[in-house]
Length: 212
Image (tube, rainbow, N blue to C red; front, side, top):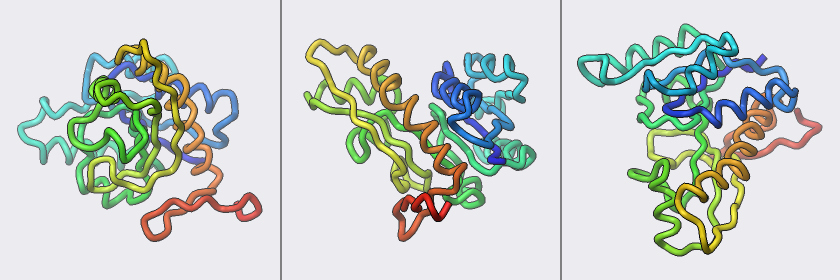
């Protein structure tokens, strides 16, 4: 059984995509043990509670300093005894103590084709606004492992999405979610659940089916 912690900040549409694909059997032998948000008003928390999944707000603003917040976040994840941490629209930097303990066991979904439109300052609508401002014709989404950098960890999966002439940032954001994020995040978790992924020399290698 692959046990997940899912970290979210907003509506939780990527969380919903993962829950739905666990329910329909696409992601095998996997369970969400805990959902954590830095935002007490995140609709994602309601999604989790509706499934009787332990769902909590752990916000930096509720602690005296970042160190205290990091300690509480780390302890919550540790208590849940999870195998994989899934960042599904989590807008807070993951502390080094978590990255060190869960090396190559933290994945993130980013709404662009990394290395384009990623790194510091590129999140949410800002990514799609930058895509439209630059005039590129193809964007997409990436699922990658998390390291100490910002969107710099080994890439697991990517999927391209067409940019249309009449797109707004909001329309493009929705299309990238529907056509890419909601597909490749569950797909990446499935590959991990099936033990088909390994990281070698900083790159993701997909094992052959007969090796799984």
